[in-house]
Length: 301
Image 1 (cartoon, rainbow, N blue to C red):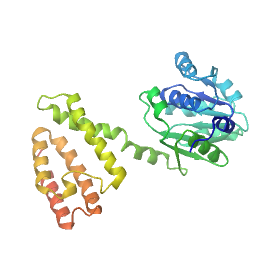
Image 2: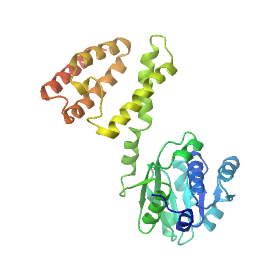
Image 3: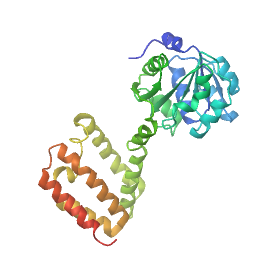
Image 4: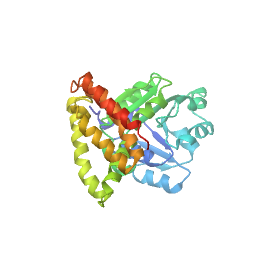
């Protein structure tokens, strides 16, 4: 449930951004659209800073030190490698809040801000930012992972919920594992689709034709997962114990590209426990599928 715009602005009266890349722009614009006061932005690129500021109702371009001096909440939205040196280069105001938006970078890189009396934390939207305009429009509804001590954690949670987002609280020391886990639901989907497209193109078709066929199927799978869960929402031959089709898939892919066939076998092997969990196959069927996968592995590639 979102809070009134006036209450949102009261959580952090002045919000600033240091770094104006795709994530920074999308988050700043989304905050502004929901009534937060995005007061200032700093960036090594003047054009990027101006782009972020132009998308907000009353945002000024300043130096990083000015952003830190004037804002109550400062988002560091630089590249991951630049977060620590950026934090080190600034004199932090006691009582301010300094947060980075990296999924994999530990909050400890903001140690100088903490030592100088600021509150520090992590605020990572689990969303894609390839197009910041689209990301700003669709950010509401995503999960935002927060790592911070109190009272900052509670205030960041209020900010996230004001955007219509769900909050995931992360314990210290888990950021890298957490961020790696997100890859399975984000960029690795692209990899899986790319493998399917490559096989599809082998008979002279196009990437677009493959995607036109794959994407409705993918949406159907996601809908099944939403309604039935991971195990029961899984389609495909493994889920129904169709050993013969799995074997034929491995053979066909092996003729086309042995590495793709090896990748397919690894995915099938991970599929077997899910099919068993769903109650779709028994131990005998699982052993039969694994036997086919083992036999294919022993063939010369």
